[in-house]
Length: 393
Ligand SMILES: *Cc1c(COP(=O)(O)O)cnc(C)c1O
Image (tube, rainbow, N blue to C red):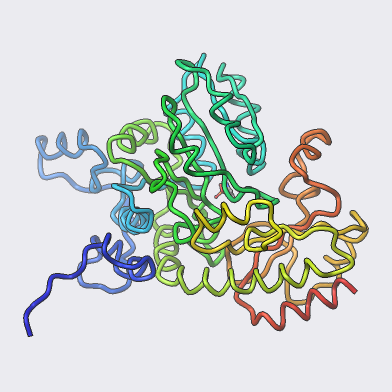
């Protein structure tokens, strides 16, 4: 037999990449090594100076970089098809660092209205206070982002797809075609295996790795991916901002990545079965899931997503009372916020994740009193179908 070179990351299928990537800082250990260290020893002044001035030097000081975190970043970069990735203490740590690294007083941001509530609160609160102007658009309307861009002033265009909590989509090709501003996509709901924003020309893909990437409800982490030069400049600000990821959380997330493909395959298959059952249920006025042919952006989902995702939402015709009744009757699904873990979670956005919205904002975002968001877990689909059938009465 002739020796064959291993296929490079780009030649491997995504599920294989999830296994092969991020192994550079663990020597011969198959499990990732946990580097808990916050500081590293220098051999002398010259060495200390080299470590202090190096870009993303891994053996200098914990806030600058860490080898376990670096392994996680390399794994995410391989999955995103990116030159590099940069991790943060949380998804919000990633988001706020990106905005404050790239935008200054007087700059303008275009963002969609359908956003994670924390992101929206940051854009409407601190950004205003720092003199960064924000225009919100409906991300599902073709051309809406381009129309809101102010040439020379818009520094950042921020989108989230699928969006929280109603699984609305933004056309990634349209975002990637924008010229001038930096384009950032919060791709959390899709996971890096569900879609690749960078392949559409977007500058930065952002994840709350707390969700599907880590996938076991045991890590709080964020990550961005893109071209190295851009990431290096964001890194230079990030060491001042200090939303530094924990090496232990990076370790858990790296372990999560190994099973990301099987988890998301199973979770999205179950999500589709649930969505189909919900779509036909008399107590449910609307089921929102990009994998349903009745979803208004079903064709777009097929075009830009590898699977329709692990989260769905339903509107209960009976409003808040019906939502309350369902939450008190589920036995397998649990009532909790967050998503992407092994347990199926149900949350009522109006009183939890989106409780900070004004009634007008909630109405614009479609956060009704009867809306429930469901993060589909890894339980047997038959048990989940039975659980919801019983809870819906
Ligand atoms: C959870 C979430 C965030 C924030 O991430 P944290 O890790 O909780 O800080 C941002 N965007 C989306 C879409 C999320 O679901």
